[in-house]
Image 1 (cartoon, helix red, strand yellow):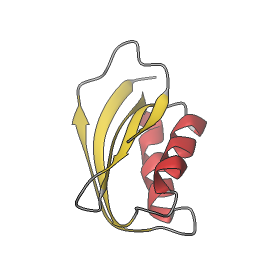
Image 2: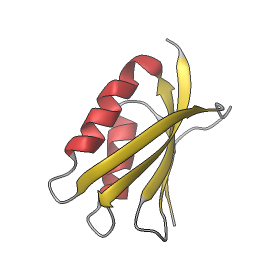
Image 3: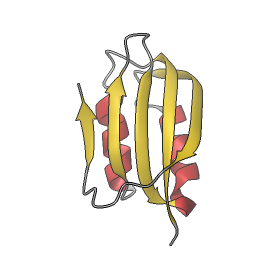
Amino acid sequence: MKTVRHAGRCMGKVQGVGFRVFVQSVAQELGFTGWVKNMPDGSVVMEAQGDEARFGEFKERLREGNGLCKVEHMTFEFCKNVDGETGFEVRK
């Protein structure tokens, strides 16, 4: 297993619809660590770290959403891994 970390941003109807908790749930299910946070511009940003082979599933699940959100645009790029991180948190 190769561990990688991606920084992502989702735009669309992603605030006020439980999207951050949904991202946290998907990340935990896939064994990812990291965090997710609302931004003042209405987007949601995150960093997720885990098995490189599972990132495609992670992104697809976020695009599908939780039934309430609507992801219209999503970007991800590699970033530096964080050693010792143990969970996936929702940040304020």
